[in-house]
Length: 219
View 1 (cartoon, rainbow, N blue to C red):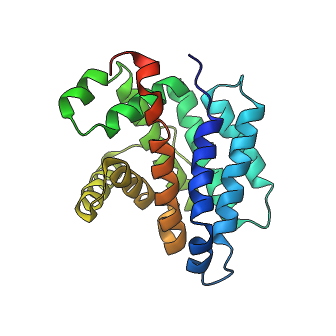
View 2: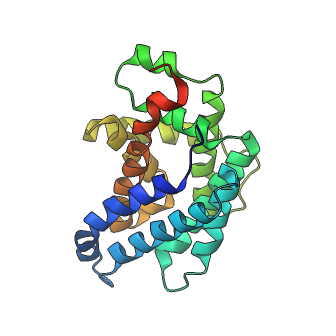
């Protein structure tokens, strides 16, 4: 069964649309952050839908290019950078969308035994790609040249601490993973971007759950 990226971006857009007014209110500067977040994921979904034959890395890169064109949307520029860094890492590790989805499904399981049974042989590469993308995103945001291998002991320690702190704040597994990811991204630097990122990432992860039985036959 072919898995498409557009519905996942659309699912994020739907959640953001439901929270659009509150996200606008949280933006004390321009009161339009919710509008900008909806625009970002509507664009990403459209690009993915128009380029269904491209692989995961190419889809992310194409979405990044379109977001850079949204000159009046500063948050779009931040997400464009993030998508580009993720694209680089997905390409480096040759990660497919199917592998990403199954790895996310396994990560969201509360049952550790089931999680281990569902894990793909390349789950480690998927995790490295995601962590590398987040690390590269932070380096780029700090005007540093992204390293060919952005992962090091300091970064891994930071990721581990972010996960433990997110776990202490509570929530379901998707919320904890979303909180941890947002905490190590450049989005953490602006409170309303951090809050909307947690919503967006959690929605992206949860959108992958209905595919579980159809993708791997091991659930």
